[in-house]
Length: 114
Length: 116
Image 1: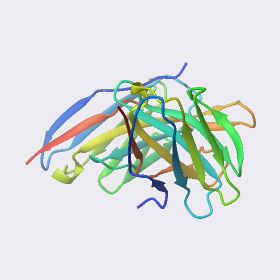
Image 2 (image 1 turned 180 degrees about the vertical axis):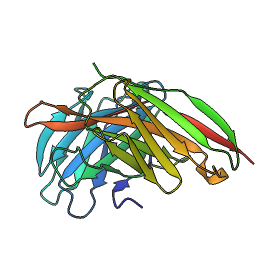
Image 3 (image 1 turned 120 degrees about the horizontal axis):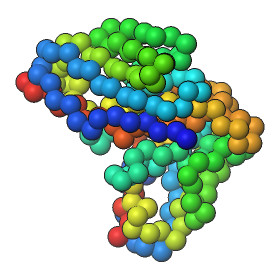
Image 4 (image 1 turned 90 degrees about the vertical axis):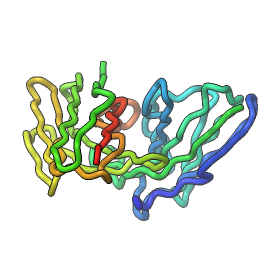
């Protein structure tokens, strides 16, 4: 158990819909990262927040957005969903803003868009 | 650009050693990681190595880094059926987007199958 929690575990929705994925980092960690794992693209970095502020952006679509709240939990919002958005979405946390040290991953949310 | 390459499959017999190889392209990598993903589970950090080291041993795991060739390997001694999983190599590279951040770039993973 990494100490990072993600909800829900599974999500099934339809194209065009919007969903919100939630992540709680390890106690004391200020940095939260979101990754997408799909069969064709592999694991890709989406976005990072540190202490409530966006720190870095990766391959995140404009239809996706995220935020980190004062209690440090983070939400990833996916809108206008397409079939290709079906993937496993991971959250990771680390104690430092840089993230060069270890990132601990949550169990993931499996999203299926029908 | 960055790219991390791994072979997709590896099959070994129980009790043998497994060696999973990885190549990366970005010479500015600071840390290199090995993560394990079991079916239906998240990513578990196995071990990592700082880029100025060439070897790290941790119980049954040995990581070798050849910085000149940008080659990383993970050796699992006395491989067990419980080691069957997908193993991801990842490099940590600093990105100067905003305040500066290290980001992980992952390989596509090597599926290790252990034959009893």
